[in-house]
Length: 137
Image 1 (cartoon, one colour):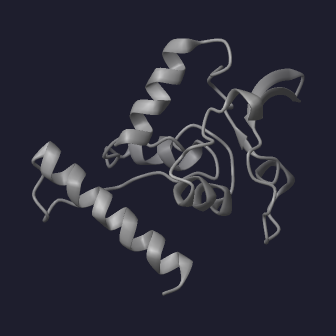
Image 2 (cartoon, one colour; image 1 turned 60 degrees about the vertical axis):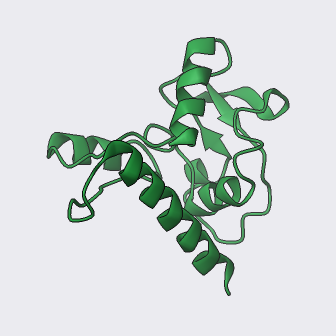
């Protein structure tokens, strides 16, 4: 089975558990944001389609990075040794750089790890907790 199909199966299993926990019927459609930036999440929210917030809803990355996090069971997500500030438009933003083996080419902003554009997960422990809770969903 291809890695993509394995991941798809794993995501479907997680969604099934989540549906049971939230007592949502299978007939209800789930709309989730998986990056590459916060725009998809904002559009879903604006049209009242957003089901819930994912760890990727308000960050910037590429799909391969998300797949690597999923395959690794998020062990390196928020790992302090991989989190550093980098400049973006004159502002320092936290950036997670746990995986370097990106195969495809994306826009340069999506090629540079996982950017926490709007959230300082380095300084704010409450945000770390919030992001860990999103991973647990």
